Image (cartoon, rainbow, N blue to C red):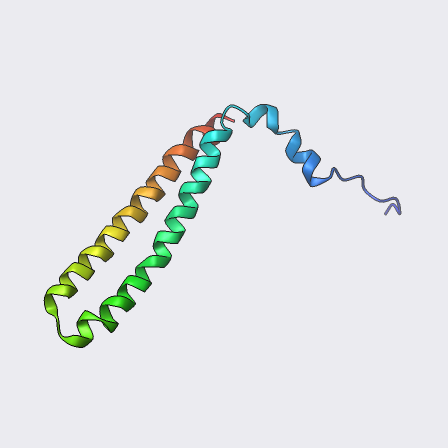
Length: 98
């Protein structure tokens, strides 16, 4: 084995070498990241909405408010699914073209 250290390219230089190839697709990749972040935030809101339903209307016996809460959870689930689909749609073309 050799005692000489291996010459590694620093991370920022390695990523900088990719910029010419990914420059035209950078907005789509960035929007895909924002969409993934939004989907994660919405996914974290679903248990909070369930906690509100259980602690509020369900505890007091208001069944009509439970329906509205269930519709809110359904809406959050649909928003999350839409954001996940948007992320996949945005990132698919750059990922297959580079």
